[in-house]
Image (cartoon, rainbow over all chains, first blue to last red; front, side, top):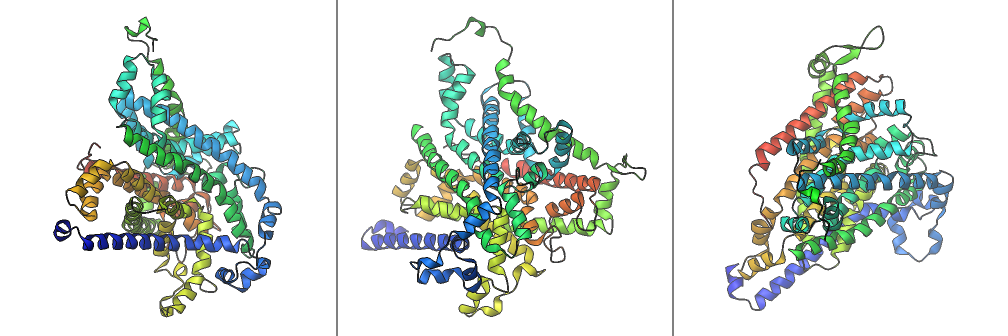
Length: 295
Length: 312
């Protein structure tokens, strides 16, 4: 590295260009390998049943504009005949509140732990974050018994609250880490100006915490949307209330033969997480950049 | 802002603290603390011959650790959990860090596209992931065998998911494929948060990309490395769905992919001829809790104390 530093001539420029190409090639190859399994499934979902059984999905790439080999039949069938349409709506009804509620509750708590003084704060915080270590399995049966006795079993309210509970330790931990690192001067200055905790929280802290909120929202949304265990235990498998994942897993079991239908079902279940990810990714990056520019 | 109230001078009743903390406290009590205590209580009971449950002390734990029917399953599942964890720590997190480092390079165009592509498997549910890989690895019509034969390495193809010696490693690698997006995103966010001036100053001083990464960027993202390690450790004990969907609750072949999650599920809910046993299930959950707690405490007091957190 000494030679290149002392001789910043053509050799240096060449090396820089080379490493740029290497970098791009490496990333491209990794992305290709990583995407291939999903891509295969995606292409298969548009192929007629007989074609799927007769040949591999890559064969369509030889003649991509031969439209007879493409069909929407798999999607049509899986949405109407297999009741995936209703479970899609159920999944939305379950997931949106189960993401928003824990974020709201955790943000309030994280602010209190970071910027308020009260007796036993550290112990209380350690207890809450410490419960990250609690395996989900431990909570299922006591909560189920509680729900049965209070009539919450099988209701959306019940599953919102359950997901809120299971998501809170991580939410409080991630948001606290972020909120506690906000510049003290900023909070103190607002206090001197006479702002209340609530005003500081909504006016300053929440707005600056976008990156942390966005990243937790992505995790929680994906977790709830793709969750199978909690949905099975608290909502059951009736088509009117069950989520998309629960329904799909049932189809995998009962329709192992009809896997051409599952390919389209799989992609329907991916649409919403993709949209959420795209939407939050923008805030994610922008929030982080805005945060570091302000310092 | 002119909202100074005279009551500020006396110390007011801390209504604001209660308002900020009450929702979290209530949810915690109902969904975490109560179930934790209730499960631990249940693990000290056994079904009585007369019906109902009777207190047996630590007998369930002793049975789990030493009984000739229970203990091989328990120790086997625990060992598999650690293999599962080791593969994630050694493959998933380094690959995630590498990808984050590559993607955070300013010379790379279309970074957002690459990031999204790599994150795609994470957006799939276990049900779909298990389904995709069963199709790929199937010895009958899977593409994996075809590819290996084409490049002349056909003799290396085996039904990896069906062999006792390879099933667990294969499933761990499938899980790595699925979840590498999470450490990648966390590392990526941490790397982006490092001020440019710091990096530029190092380059001006003649440091190479390699040196800059290990001497400047890596120490600054150490807290994230810690979070990722803890999340991997805890998540590994919650792993259940992938094995359940590909190998069923029996975690075959011959229990070679049985981890504590599936062991718990079989015990608690019952499977095929085996009846559900809530008290032994609670005992397994209790053991899982103790093991996770032990690991996290070791981390907190062994490692967290030693790492230096740099102020950016």
